[in-house]
Length: 96
Length: 445
Image (cartoon, each protein chain N blue to C red):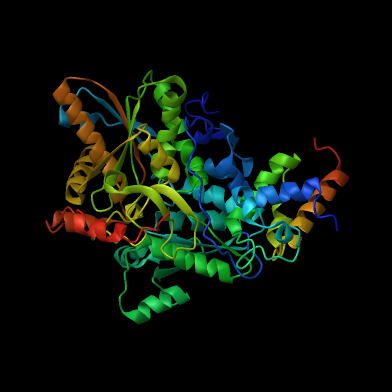
């Protein structure tokens, strides 16, 4: 997996913001690292804020359903969800 | 529209003061850790967006407007008999929010939050409530949008106001006194024997634990968060348009302050005139001397609940372990206030006053006699503040337009009025020693 794509960088920036420099590149390229305790130490509100931050970057809004129903344990879970939503948005085409 | 609200017409959009703040809000600090397993989403994305958006007008969905129309537009009335009794040339108006099933302003966010949670797929909401207005409002909202509802009600209010429980149950809610045996935090406190049954922050802690342990359940809070204040701005938007239709413009706007939904909902639409157009309108928050966060609290980072798991916000606070002396305005017991209102106070855009309980009830009794509405103990603080402003105007020989939010009725609070009438009510002023003790436990940032 290419761990340095622009989308991944945007996701990490939206997720960690000012805390980004406190993690090593090895940690940030490891999809298995936990989002919560013992990993990136990201709580529920920070994760939600990351989705909203990404909306500004990506130019579309996330639906609550996939976000609320996702089991987000690791960084890979989060990136995978965002990638699926980006793909779904592309498939839907331009919004009215 | 925030600038174009028509008198007698429901606003089509809420007013978002974040668009007009002339300063940056201090960022929240997330506590380190998070959960060890999957991270559970606690809030609909729409409410997260509303908490950070810089869009001045946030359109109100038609599904919410349909419910608002049951009781909105609420009346703006002139308190002519009160003016006459005071012998003041001030013109006193009040915006009455007690004319709905919840009896208070809280229904404007109760309906909105239930809609957004239901739309996001929640099946059940939990919440903490002090005096019960918020719990009732959320129960009504949940029933309207098909959600189950569990309310953790501050124990002292639960016992003082048994009919609050009844009305919440009428709207389908499961209501328990906090601390309760239903959560591990509550059970531990009950077992320890050192039960504090007046702590709204602990009721929120129990509601949060319940939500975290149930798959389809989310926590809802009634005040303090930017979105709950946003939803209540329909109050100030309507009042501003109603005054304009009378050829009046507010000089002084007052509302009681708990965590912020009432004060912000009433004052922010007026405050935008000051922020955008340098209008000299004065917005004054009235708080109880038993819980004086703006007038005697510290402006620093603190937790919004008592368990220390929520994000730290910079706000005026008395410390999340603060225990107010016995008081009847349960909705004003919260230890801190909204970070937006705190920052506005810190930067000098709003004023704050605090008053003792007996003095407040004295004004409420006069208002009930002259204007025919028994104010809720929380709302009575605004009544008292308005009377003080009118008397000040009389002494200074001025004739300002004073408008305040009468945020709810007091018909569930007659035990409090009974205590007032019996002469047993004290002013319930917190001591410096108690404040210092509570502030000792502020997190070090």
